[in-house]
Image 1 (cartoon, protein in one colour):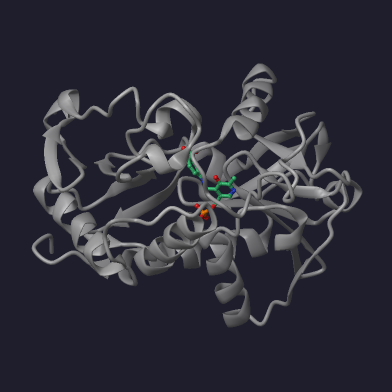
Image 2 (cartoon, rainbow, N blue to C red):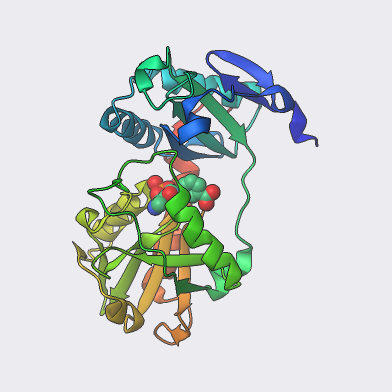
Length: 297
Ligand code: PXG
């Protein structure tokens, strides 16, 4: 099955993957000036599409970028692209860049934002990480300070995360924990972090400088369902090392147990019972609760 036949949406038109190209004068390419979303479809249903679209439009507003489609039109464009590609299980990447301009920074020179919708198959972590848990490290690269470039904006400027990811790769692990400018736990390069201690969940608050993940929000919902309290606040590395359980959340990773951090076993070094319960409930929800794509069912 050749992926080259996949169609990519660019500014209202579909192009086969090899021809899906953007100008080198696009300020997304020149400056990372733009915003994006990573979304998934399971079983012909798009998971938390409204939440992802709302975050995209909030990110765009924060950088004074006016998306040339309404939220409803964007939703239809996502459905259309999935239908054309007959993808029932997919990774969906929405990108809205400042558009084509001249070589200066001035965003006013960009006539209209570029809108790209890529729907592709997903690269999953191997199943063993979900069964046995994952090892992570703390990286030396600190998360962007919120007063410099707020991590809550899902911008095309991911160099901070990529520098951290390079450390992760060099260490031979899968993910890395990033601290904020105060040395408190923020998030991982592409995932949020939770710990559980005595059946209470703790996760860094938004003002620690994080992306408020959609999967993170889903954990809040499931915890309420399980009558497990969640505390959003300040989290030190020491608290993380001493936790009973730890897991990461993200659209790609879903919920993945962490069993070793910087050489310290978390709890007994096995995925914990609360983590397992959340993973199981999450997998149930994504199969049935997403927005059905008309014509894909
Ligand atoms: N923090 C950061 C910095 C992210 O980029 C998350 C947390 C989790 O958010 P969601 O809404 O997905 O629960 C993300 C999003 C990748 C990749 O290919 C991962 C993300 C974004 C883009 C690419 O690993 N994670």
